[in-house]
Image 1 (cartoon, rainbow, N blue to C red):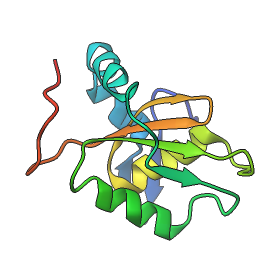
Image 2: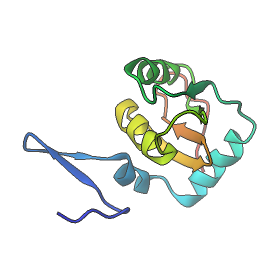
Image 3: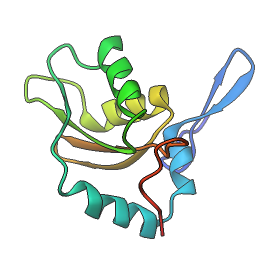
Length: 121
């Protein structure tokens, strides 16, 4: 099986699942740019430390998406995992999209059904 940055299909028990890399194609570059501009003012609300991505952190981020659509996460220096890998895993587990990974900051977006505040262009 070949794996590229553009398409990644994970086959699990006979079911094909889309990864967040594939979900990313549903967001246009204009929408991504708009979300980046909104996130520039945000402070990180979660920090990932030496324990890396724990179920508790994943659950907390998932709960935060109940009240907000755009979340910034900081990966601390003592975390040995790659921030891009953490972003992809976190997006997959929370059913969100990776907007940007820059340095050790991760920006995630998940459209809210009840608390919609962000209107994408």
